[in-house]
Length: 162
Image 1: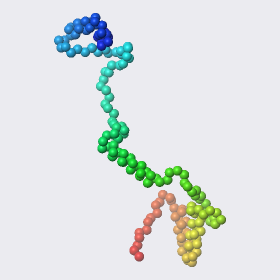
Image 2 (image 1 turned 135 degrees about the vertical axis):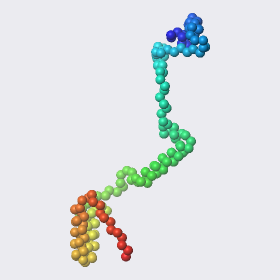
Image 3 (image 1 turned 120 degrees about the vertical axis):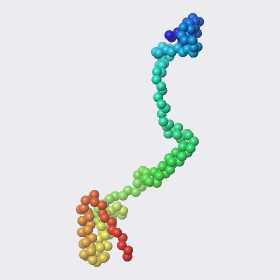
Image 4 (image 1 turned 180 degrees about the vertical axis):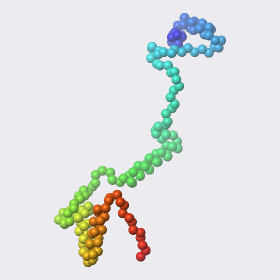
């Protein structure tokens, strides 16, 4: 049947043979010749089933369509601004903080993260109050809270009007 395709029909004898074959078929004048295997010269397969349904549009095709493109670009810009607002620290810290636990660090560089300085200041405040019982109660409350389970949430006090 390959002599009935387009290129072989250039030959006059092949056209005669095709005309005779059409006359032998039905009376209708619409006839189609198909080849069911690969064409040796082009090596192109014959489609035997319907093509796959089209894929959903990608983000680039959505950005190129009229109202959605403008809206999505604005949403992307707002999202980037939100990320910079929510997470402002990018890169290394400019100042290095060291965590020390020594109480006497007057000769060293003053550090904000020095817990020993906090304890020293709190002890000075308790000493200035002059109430030894109150100071001991504060220390015992601290020790109780330090030894509690970390999973328990501390209860908030209700504000009372003065």
